[in-house]
Length: 204
Image 1 (cartoon, rainbow, N blue to C red):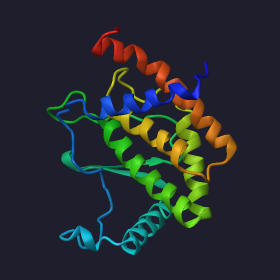
Image 2 (cartoon, rainbow, N blue to C red):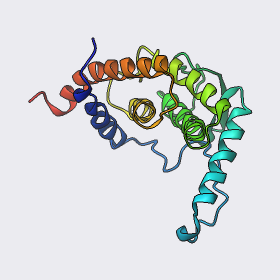
Image 3 (cartoon, helix red, strand yellow):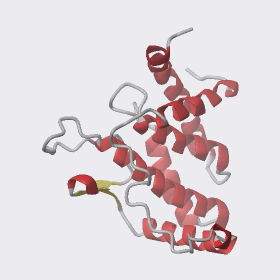
Image 4 (tube, helix red, strand yellow):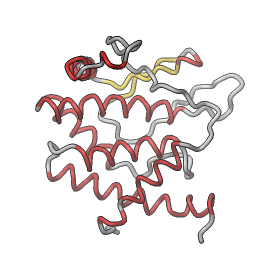
């Protein structure tokens, strides 16, 4: 099923709803987000040059990694997932006191951070290596059958779909095949999310 472009903004609404759902494991910052090296005490000093330098630095660090390393620092675990990610992987590791640990949320945060860094480096600086890596990983993400293992509106759904939506609407470097794959994935995410929206907020 392919939805007209006029329906795709609904995906953004879905993301916003999911991102603001209360979750007991919500963290303010992305997992393992690289530290900004500028002067945060005075936002006026965050010049264009400083921002571009930081994005280049982050992209270079991510390009050097062949795996997605997720720091589950709250439970003292650091796990590496092979790239590109073909599906959501839930580690079969026990977490004392937490029966259903949200592995997928931390994974989606780190994946979003990585793709943001590579994607904007490709967009702003015409970085071919960043574009190649991000394009390959976005195409794999677009092939996911589901964007959350929980079959409900949640942060994993919100972050993965927001990553795809940003790429589709903001990054001009995408190849036609990758852009088409992302468009189909966004269509699928809307179809999947509609019943969850109706279940939570009603169908009227």
